[in-house]
Length: 257
Ligand code: MLT
Image 1 (cartoon, rainbow, N blue to C red):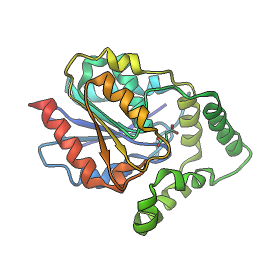
Image 2: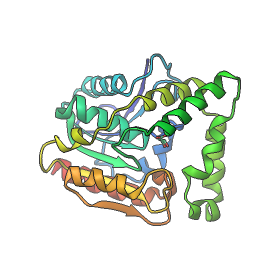
Image 3: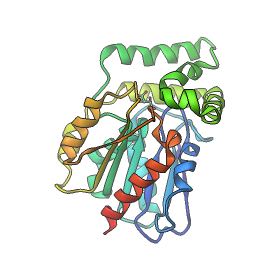
Image 4: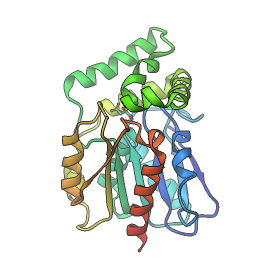
């Protein structure tokens, strides 16, 4: 397994580490990153099999360990770690394995619960379809990744995402689906984080992949209120980068105050 870490060198303050969704790569954070104030040192990570990295054995836990050592290799002891969807699963694996790294945690468009059996089976079906030679399996996700408002009114966002789904690397898709299928419930890991740890739980009001109850459960475990983004579906960071940048800036300032 390899990961790619993109940092503004040198990182002299607590960085904001942004972990991407499936089946995208770290480029999905660009619209948010360019809206963040200069005071926020951004570190982007590509998961195994994405952004030109190699996949290797599945496991979000191994990825969490890699991210923690990559952050420490930048010369910092703590980071604000935020992930969207699959990236949120990785942030929660970090909360479980290395809570001391966290100066704050951001969980966007994600959930702490493990997959029910039908969802696990659907992930492994995608792996089988890829092994059968299907090349564009990720394209079928388009309608569920974007909210109705985006699909109806933001054609540039729709077309850009369609291109990224078409190009989604097969090794990454396989690695991620196998890794996500194995992940455990992490609500206890969130509840065990220090009281008052700065946290953000954010969801798009039109998200059909993550239920409001999922966001409520994480928010309750972390002692915060859910931030809901109107007019956005699952991929909040590309559907409404202004709202996501504002929420992440607020998290970062609370975490570094
Ligand atoms: C994502 O956006 O990362 C995925 O929808 C997460 C998942 O498949 O559970």
